[in-house]
Image (tube, rainbow, N blue to C red; front, side, top):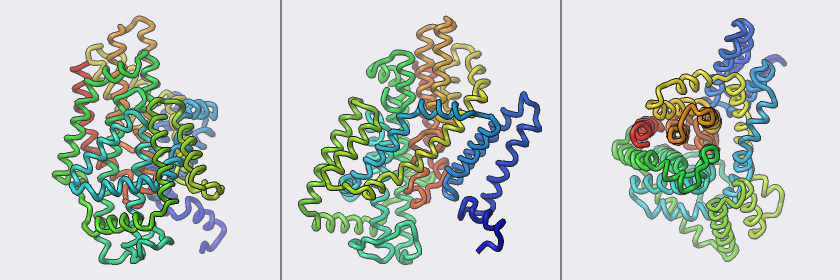
Length: 505
């Protein structure tokens, strides 16, 4: 217990996180205003803003030590107090990305109500496909195809839900309990039997592999179509490309990159480099098989009816997303209403559980938009943009690809794409570039913001969602580990993408 009120304040600050972490955040909050007021007015805001961006990335990197919402939120509050950005700028960024917020609020909750069906389907796949390489390719390809026509965040939410289901089933048995046991905390390893500890660690590595392959798959598929990522639609609207034209114009880059991504997967699984190659332990497979058999035996007519309802809702979900009948978030709300209405989930506390996963991340995303607002208001990327625009036109596509990729690793790829596409469209309207050159730069911007950005969790919303999900601490997937596991993909996708942009468009 704290010995004084003063020590109690320090104990309560950021809860159970390490003391060194607490002092680091406090140091950030003290250093930023000092930089702003000590340095000249011409450079102080820029230096302080860059420090703020790096400090926020630090909070993401330490996500397993402390959820980034609180320390990141304190940084954004300070940024507003120091006038590095304003509430109006934050509001602008939030409303510009409001479809993503709607998606998180309702689509992730909708997936929660489909978890029984998803676990049923993916358990069949996991048990039926014994080859780790084939299973990895299957996860990556399915994620890519779904992301091309649906949405990367939705696909990631599905895979996370499935992985948590698998983990919970095995962790229960590893803790010495029966599969039928209902009350179990899968976040604690205290009860895990020594015999199962090595299998549990291998199972975590196995799930990490599948999650990273699937996450990369969402990037490989998301870059291909107008609806794959939010910035794709923005770019298509600016240059007036329809669905088919967008796909065909991107294909000289996206198709070679897709093949290169799958070849990278094969190499990683065969060699075991960068933490890949972990196989499903025999004991875990047996337990999952037994669980599937027990679930099948006890499944009654009510359960079967619920699975049918979830399947129908899943078909409606895919059709609604594929034909874009409404915003993705609204389709998610439709799924919630349909499943809960026809499966008897009508009490408020039953509904509340579905929103527990998404709303913390939604809050974090709003804080992230606060950092983006600082980048925008302080024009942190302007020198880089201007430098690329002043280069010789023959090298501009390749340099746009690299510049967008590097900036997307740091910031929000939707924001980076917005800034760059607006700049080149203005250049076209001013007759500084031709229509053909505008098309080439649009391809470079789209592929640049989608491909190299897999390097860091803050590069893409789906990756950030995975990092801050309930699954990440269970399978020990930290920021640093995600960066390391994504590194071979980053190198391959960046090199192949750059060569294709430079030579094939």
